[in-house]
Image (cartoon, rainbow, N blue to C red; front, side, top):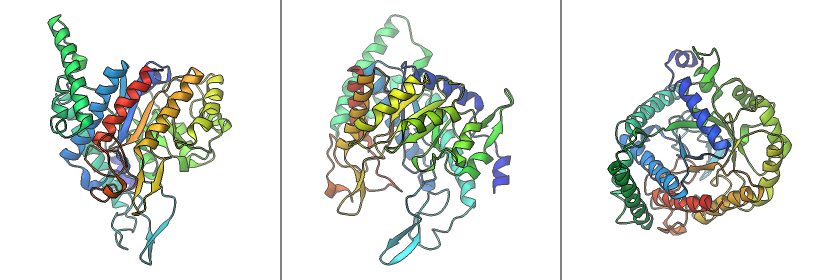
Length: 416
């Protein structure tokens, strides 16, 4: 299977990875803001035009809100076209007295709670590649073929405005964007930048067999690139300095992210810089902080202070999802929208107090009207969780909650 993957064409091009590294350098220097979002775990049966368009539409709407309301260039990166593998806390799960191996993402085994589904199957790596290729193909078509044109700001919202408070708030902003575009056109300017959007793909580089099979030597530079996605990150569970994931990431030229949880020490953060960004190149390294709303204000300041004092220019991003998960009485894993928001607020407060740049947000979201996280303007209650709980792993923000978050983040950014 790995030999087959090694013969397949790249999913992304090394030059595109360089482009994202340049964009991330602007984020690290305080000149842009990163919006990174998408599914917790992608599923093979969700590779449909509707699913992909809805996810992209939500990210485009959030991007429009952040760009216009916060007056900042927004780098758009999807958790998309490769997020098929999940690290799990426990190797097995037990239901009604039956114990089976845990579901580790569609790239490894099946979601159904049966013995047959939970057997790891190498064929799935090939399916992961083809699903990622199909997704990227459609994303490229949407982002360059007219769908992402800023003159479509109303069209992205048509199905949404009547029912949702965040949809109505967005519609008002879309009218302002429209007026601004009309004014520019009347003045004789209609920049090509408004007609397409740069959109990059990212995922956790968890399955090193897959990632290394898709690592190629770039013909332009002779350097190694992981061509499974533009940006890859190392998760909280696999960031041990003497383990394989750090070693792999140190060899490739892609922009690299590392998830930093509440136990991360400043010394570890500095060692990551030494190993992964020895040249101190802005845009190379992104720290994605996932502390939990109750810990962010205590744990983050020392990390930011010591990294900044070291002279390294990293991008600081908040992941307000992973530190705020709890189990509802119904047994559903969920997150409170207020906790998500509070972690983002804490992240902004820390950077404001230190005079550093809050570089962006990393969120698990979907373009569908699911009921997986509690709260938001279109309020979802704990008793509603069962109605549309569709995630394969962690609870995601729905479209309404995602837009609410974008408006609130734009306000925080303006207040910096």
